[in-house]
Length: 485
Image (cartoon, rainbow, N blue to C red; front, side, top):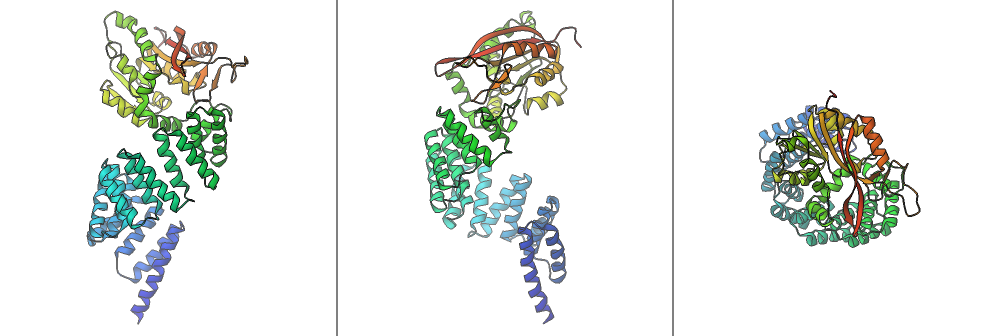
C-alpha cells in the first residue's frame, strides 16, 4: 500500500513539475524533481524533465548529460531521442540532431512532431526533397499545427516551388486566420519572389483581420516602396514602429521614410536582412542599372604609382565587398592579396565562388577596423559609405588602418536640394527615403581633412541610373601622408 501511495504521489508530482517548467519556474521544478527521484526509480520521463529543467536554467551541458545517460540506458526510447535532437539543434550540433531525429522517427512512425523535427533538420542540411516528404507527413497527421505548415512551406520554397509554399500557408491561414506568423510567412514568400502586389494584398488582409504585427507592416512598407508608393510605405513603416518601437530594422525603415530623425548609420541587422534577400539578383540588378563604381575604381587604380611602376599593390581590403564586383573589376590588375568583408553571409557566398579573395570575413566594418590590427596599402568601399551618415568615425578608423601613402577609395551619393531648393538634413548629410545616405561635397572634404587625409581625387560621377535618370554621386580617393607613421 505504501509503495502504491508513493507511486501515485510521484505521478501527481511529475505532472506538477511539467507545469512548473511550462510556467518558467525551473528552480521550483528542480527541487520538486529531486523529491520525486527519491520516491521512484529512474525513468525516461524523469530524464526528460531533468533535461528540461536544466535547459530552463541555462545549463545545456547538464541537460545533454541527462539525456546521454538516459539514451544509453534506453536506446530505443523514441521520446528521449526526439528530446535530445531538439537539444542538439539548440546547441548547434545539427549532425547529431539529425541522427537522433531520424532514430526517433524510426522508433515511432506515428509521431508528427518527430517527423516535423526531422524535416526541419533535413532542410538545414539542404535536403529539401526529403524535408518536404517528412513535413508533408507531419501536416497530414496534424493539419492544425501551424509550425508544421511553416516548415513545409519553407522546404517547398527552398526547392523552388513558391506556388506550393503559398498554397500550404494559405491553407493554414484559412484554418487559423488569427495566426499572424502564418500570414507573415506568406507575405515574405511573395516579397522574395518579387510579387509586391500580392504582398500588399496579403498584408492588407492581415490588417483588416486585426492580426497584423510590426513585421506585417514592415513587409507591407517594403512591398509598397518597391512599387514606388513611398507615401503609403511611410505610413506602413510608421504603424510598424508603433508595434515594434525597439526593433532596429523597423526604426531604420521608418527613418528612411522620413518619419524619424536620421540615425548616423544603418543598423547592421538591417543591412544583413536587406542584402541576404538581395544576394541572388544583386549583380544582375546593378548591371541593369548601369552601375559604374567598379569601373571607376579600376580606372583610378590603373594609374596608381605602384602599379604604373610594375609592382603589386597590396595588401588590399574591400569593405562591404558584397558579391565581389570590385574584385572582378580589378582582376587584371596586380592588386593582391585582396581581403573582403561583408555583413551578409549570402553575399559572401557569392564572393567566395569567384575565388578572387585571399580571405573573406563576415563582420561589421567598424568592428573589423577596430579589432583587426593589420595595415593596408589600399582600402576600397564601393557604395558602402552610403549606409553611413556621419563619416568622422569611419574615416578615422580607415586612416588608422592604412599604411603611409595608403589610399582609401570610395563612393557616395551626393546630397542635392529638393525641387523647392531645400537641402535635406543638416546640409552635410541626410538619410533618403530609399534607405541610403547622401552627403555634400563640402562635408566630405572637411571630414577627410579632420581625419588626417589628403584628397587625391574628388569628383562628381553618375553612380548608376534609376528610372532612366542618373543618380548623382561622388567618387573619392584619399591618401594617408607618406611620412605619417
